Image (cartoon, rainbow, N blue to C red):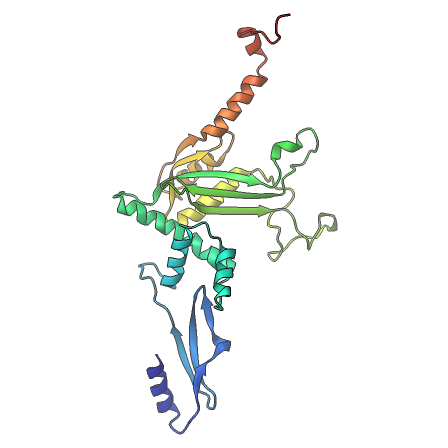
Length: 290
């Protein structure tokens, strides 16, 4: 790289005796790597931008990912270390650390690719058709407001989709929804913008798992991942989202629905306790004899 820059600078400005250096104002950083441009401290010479990294060769159009960025995500998927911990280690070594959002964006692409590669090595004819598990987590239990308020008590939800192909059960898809905004309180009546933390209106149901699942599955479908088997709660409508995507020809794999045994048993136990007719069908002693 520097040899070509020296020759080009000498050819364009033969009488210049300035020093060549990086133009830090024109630096482009992508995770752990960057693109640099050389400049002369005396003349107006500016070189083209050079990629100081090796790319992953794929047949897909667009910018190719850097090998070190992909390798870092592959290593993170096998360790309990998070992005914050990784950035602390890198900064502690006096090196520029990638942003958290950049790491998350790359992880959203790398983890599905790892899953497809695993199924390819297993000899699957369709490595993108995988078994998935999906469920939503709320900051407040939705049922906790029954009989207390007409509104849903939850204001934040994280809907996660995990693969069920490996022992790790890695999360490969996440949808986050938030009704809270510190910039535009509810009483102000102002509408939130894209810069606000809130991405959901208060009129929208926070427990609409059909919409959250459909958004997550569509995102996975764009990366080549489709639900062959989908495990959800018995009371969840997430499976209908996967089925509708298949009927809409968004995905080519017809999903098969499985129920989560833990939630299924809990719901079954509650139904038995609440069924008063069972006491008449199978009467039993509820008190000890004197």
